[in-house]
Amino acid sequence: MANDAVLRSSLIWLAAIILVVGISTQSFKKMIATYVVGVLGIAGVLLPDWGYFNRDFSRWTSPITAEERAAQIAQRSGSKRFRIHYMRLAIYTAVYGFALNKWWMFVSN
View 1 (cartoon, helix red, strand yellow):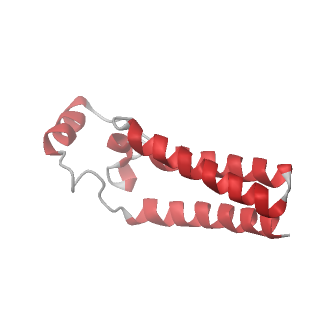
View 2 (view 1 turned 45 degrees about the vertical axis):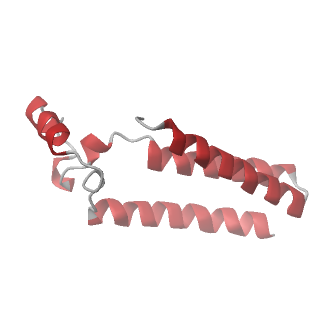
């Protein structure tokens, strides 16, 4: 990860959310569940090799070549770094939606 500030601020926000859940529910199990869901969510968004996944979905099963990596590095700019791929967006929406729904049902009961 090139910028640790995003990871650091995400973990601070997660700690604040865990504190709020702990105070409002007074349950250690719900705090741990919030921690696990939060850390997995942060890791799923911030840690993948976006150079590898920032290709067409059909190319995910093949390794990235040196030419592709060099082209991505040469093409990289602030606004073009994260392109929207609809398959990745659909997968992330389904997985995180399901996880957040299960977490909310657990914490709110």
